[in-house]
Length: 160
Image (cartoon, rainbow, N blue to C red):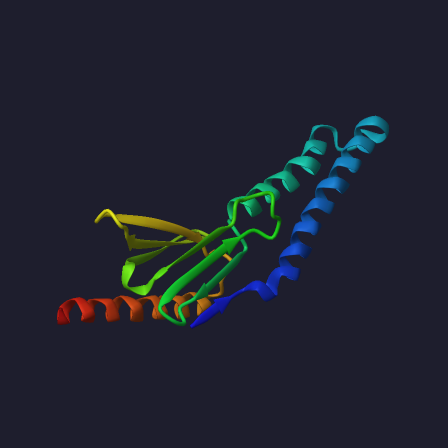
């Protein structure tokens, strides 16, 4: 199964540009209000603070682009930001038999996928992916696909 929200990049770009324009306009209005009119008095700081808070929330929301591919003998996860210099992109590929478990955690508007994979030294490694920008249907499809892989792994272990 393949899952990708790469087609939504223009929407995310529009939203980022809108936030930056709000910040720029707020900054210009703040300076004009302070130097010329002084109508808003101390409330003029909100013209800068509100867009900055929205930008911080957008950054904390996580990487926008999530790609998953389970076709073949390997699982492939990609998670990246549309602005390349903000976060380092994640790109993991490993055999299906190494998948031990996964957990999807949702807190308010934030959603993360934690994938536990067996490692070479007999332990396990936890891989983290931000899935906040996926729709509910995409999340359900992802869970279904990962559950199929885990069930197939359990059957193979049980047969051995």
